[in-house]
Image (cartoon, rainbow, N blue to C red; front, side):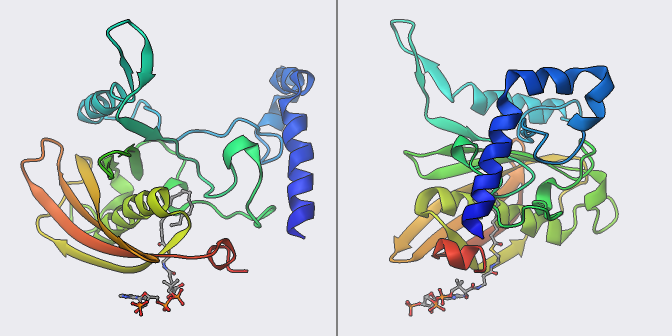
Length: 244
Ligand SMILES: CCCCCCCC/C=C\CCCCCCCC(=O)SCCNC(=O)CCNC(=O)[C@H](O)C(C)(C)COP(=O)(O)OP(=O)(O)OC[C@H]1O[C@@H](n2cnc3c(N)ncnc32)[C@H](O)[C@@H]1OP(=O)(O)O
């Protein structure tokens, strides 16, 4: 079953990359085709890139970290910097490296929780950067109006979602396939809706299958602590991750 899904996806992926098909899809007469779901949409939207809903604070922080993803040497050569921006799509496993279709939910409507609202700025706007050498990550997060909990402030579940996503992605980056076994959160001060905050996570230790990560959420200028958390991730087999 999985093998045939992969085969079907490869054919469709290659169809989507043919210049002829791309030209035809761009033609007004057939433009509606490009709005159809996969396999006709071969260019997934990267949600981690700036859009018009981003505040000046969010954009400034994005540029700060993004500028450190590539640095210039004294000879004027460009080389990889200490930080790396992680692209982000609305399906967790669809767009693996090389365009290989991995998800078993071929025809399903499954979407990544944090990326399932298309209106820019309405819910979770975020971008994540990883510093491999320092084994830490940073996420710039702007909470939209659909994430309200207490009046004018962000819902605790939305904050937990972001912490789980950031620490989970960080743990995956460090240890491969993992699942959250434990997430422990202390809410210290409410996060105003619409504000931009920073989530910083660092690896505390690794013991066998266990990866321990801690995370704090602060105001954009780091002066105010909003939330602190620790998380335990357990390495799992790919079949466990896919529930097979
Ligand atoms: C992260 C994946 C991303 C992949 C995609 C990458 C692309 C990026 C794209 C998009 C990023 C989005 C990122 C989202 C991230 C979200 C992640 C989640 O929310 S995951 C959903 C919520 N979590 C569950 O549903 C787990 C349910 N639980 C389980 O499946 C099992 O309990 C599991 C796997 C966690 C452990 O089960 P066992 O059978 O493998 O292991 P046992 O034997 O029970 O435990 C092993 C050791 O761990 C300890 N342990 C287990 N659970 C513990 C706990 N809760 N607290 C403390 N210790 C625990 C045990 O005491 C044992 O320790 P001793 O070896 O004896 O020292």
